[in-house]
Image (cartoon, rainbow, N blue to C red; front, side):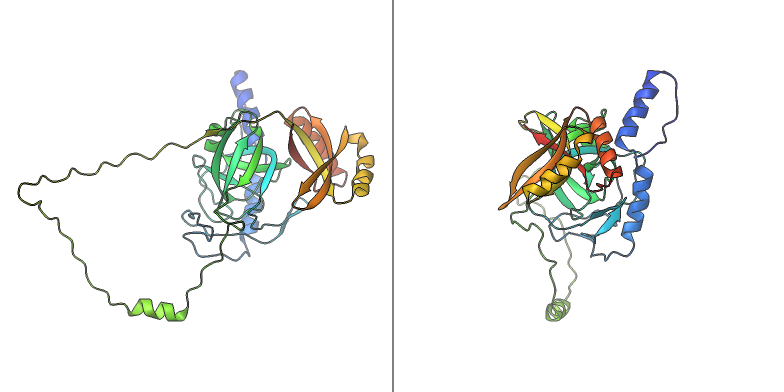
Length: 317
């Protein structure tokens, strides 16, 4: 997202350039996009989001309206069944202490993430499919928009998930259900009668004092507060996975077959069947691809050839 790394002597500078370039290639562009998105969107009351997730200082609960970035239209929505695989990246130094898409202050040491369509804030479980590490992150920002990334995590999250140095990782992102399928409750409404009843309650001054213990009884020791637990990283069993670029998904096989016939110049093309709910989809995918860089190249070529909604996906064997 960013390109501010200053040239330095030796291999260390080269490694730093590669890492920061991978994790933050479009930092300045994303900041400008987020500033545009914040204008004109209705804001909710700060405090606690309808889904029960605490809102950070200065922030608001926000789903947002459809928007277009680089020719692709995104539709923010509440999705209690969200479950997607793809490539994750991380962002930090160039955006630290700046304002997120819902008005909070971004801290690269917090366990947060940016997503293109999920409500802000909400919780997602991110699993690194390359090493089996998994943790829950709080979505409070929009992005990423470059190279088909599915989620952008904070620098600290990338460290704990084990991909800070390499910059990207194959991941699975799942919404953390709050106990119901919809997962986000409607905003509560207080009636005028309830408001009047609350204001009518008499207010009295309350005084407090410390009482001495009864004779012959020792005072209880002062409570000892334990420090907060460190961030929890779970280890899950993961199998081998492959990278693909998905050009489209259709409910009719003949439509998928026609698209596949047009894409053979981009690489090995296949059609994969998947049932979502009660509907069968035929997904046209190029791959498997050996590296994220190779997938990025194929994706860029596809988008440049008139397939703006193509994206990188991860197929688990």
